[in-house]
Length: 106
Image 1 (cartoon, rainbow, N blue to C red):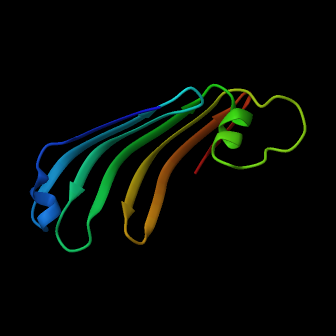
Image 2 (spheres, rainbow, N blue to C red):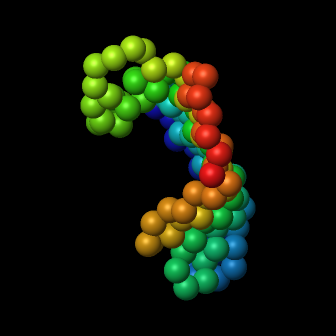
């Protein structure tokens, strides 16, 4: 597994300004990317575009500790969205999800 992170201005950790944030998690069952800004005023917050791509949803679920149960192989999975994250949690907006022949938007 490989984790890549790039932040244009580390002053956001002292509570001032904002910096461009790029994160990537690369592994066999998953590729996750985030591109956006990290805001340092008050409650540290990240806003931007996120994507998750997995070649096999069943393997991804097992890798995260979830039991996918018995059944047919679950094929490729992808999720793209606008994401906002802070200490209170994560909000996903304008989300597009697809898995094999199924897709959803919300």
